[in-house]
Length: 184
Image (cartoon, rainbow, N blue to C red):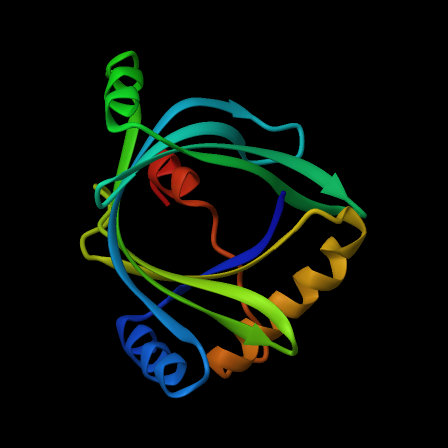
């Protein structure tokens, strides 16, 4: 599965406005989850950024995720494999990596359609150790198995964020690991 996404840093005020916007629209409010991400294996990707293996707690759920960058039609795209695992497996794996990078965040999620395309929205509130205050992000994402659709879907996701934020231009944020590791 390929995740076609854009992540944009936003202000606290924009976050509140977006929550109101999505609640008034046809988007489904999926609630808030507290997440703890443990990046256990990370390597530089040939396409920039990092390929990684991550374990996550999300409420009572435990997840294992592997993300690898691929270049599709000149666009860096993430191939993602994710599965639910037992909490005991998560604890066992994390114990093998005592120095792994951990990121905790609060995530508010919505799902719905934009121009007839299913789209998922996550808004993260993160307090990085290097940042004096909580930072806010919105990520819009579409999943696809079809490589040939990646370019058009990326344009659609960007258009959705521009429209939702009322901006002519959006600046893509680095991934959470990049920001924590490089202290961005």
